[in-house]
Length: 196
Image 1: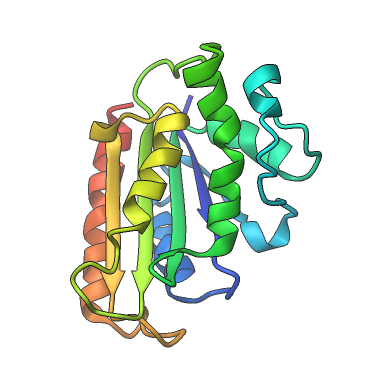
Image 2 (image 1 turned 90 degrees about the vertical axis):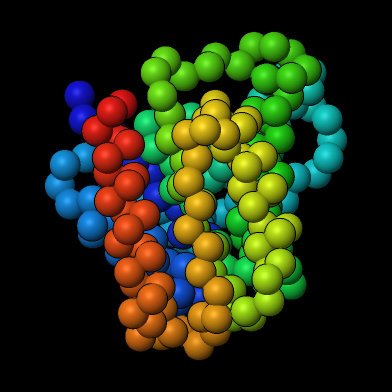
């Protein structure tokens, strides 16, 4: 069976820089793999309530689109998350999703009921930022790594595409450097997926 890629676009601004980079990754991968793209702004994912129910029940008690999306995250062979940098972190939509993945953490580290995936599961985090300061991604990467960890993706099987200096909505498509970096990561990702 062909490896399945789940790609999540989290930006509230449709077809901006992070989603454009995500779309290019998916296009570069071609038809060799099954792919599903989820646009988070089309779904209803409420923030975590911090109620602690997942630490007792192993599931989130909030009933919304996270229930279905969480199953897709766990089932995917490759998880690609794309977010713009807002206020030195991932956008609030991405953070709400990742916070809800606390249920995976509860299963893995509290209840010890988390089923590690069979074989190698891969993660790619795409982040775009308008600023160009050296530490612009310093708070976003650990958040993405948390998601990958609790989803069963080992650090050595994660990749990062961090693109800065992309502020206006079309900056990505007009940046030959950003496009080249994205195609390079897509090729590396494809080579890694072939080994799954």
